[in-house]
Amino acid sequence: MLRDTLRMNGIPPEWVGCEILTRARSGGDPVLQIQVLIHQWHDGLLRYAPLIQQQLLQALQRFDPATDHSRHTVVWRFSPACECPYTSMPEPGYWTSATALPKFDLSPSDRDHLDSGFAPTQQGQWR
Image: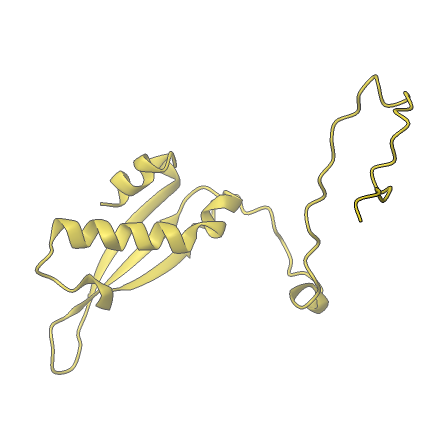
């Protein structure tokens, strides 16, 4: 299921692995713990982890519709060799500071120096 999910989304299958552990649950059926193993770091894996997890559980539900797969636990683990570029935590203010919005910039043009005679913020006579 994981390989199909990765393939459908263009994620190289060698970047992510999976281990399944069975956990006993009192008074009921055992619950699966799905450990998603990150072998190769890519920022997109964390950004889209909730969607990858959702698609994986949906694929399991399609494969075995008689089982309630929503009870499974999904755990994300990182290989020590995954090449995570971060070696230390950011300053505490990082987590609560406002996120800068991406700036929309057009690439420079060789016509930028020309005066069009139009000020885009100029108010018109539309009253």
